[in-house]
Length: 137
Image (cartoon, rainbow, N blue to C red):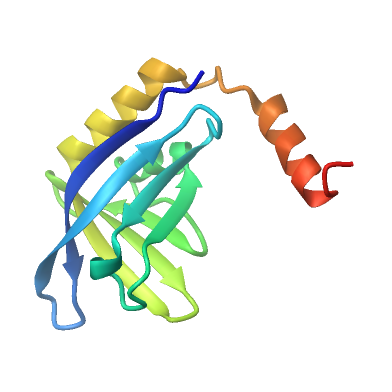
């Protein structure tokens, strides 16, 4: 299956001064990696000047829409009734990005239409991971 879902999203970066700055972002999903979702930020939206992609579990996004979820590099929690915060940690620091709940829910529904929850082909993901780890042996 080669269906890729890409959905532009109106995100807002929350600055250290508690200001909200519009940031372009694209939510992306591919059945080739059915457990994951991707958030792409174009080069003009990053400190490095390079496009940045964050990858994390689709289930984490679903959980974070309802209650605080995640540990480590990606944490997600409801901000209020209409927005959700995604917190990304990297060696360079952290970024707090707000997304409209409606955009995140619509994105998840589109991913579920392609690969329903619980129907992910985990064996193929494990096989690719092992192949990459052991150099295709």
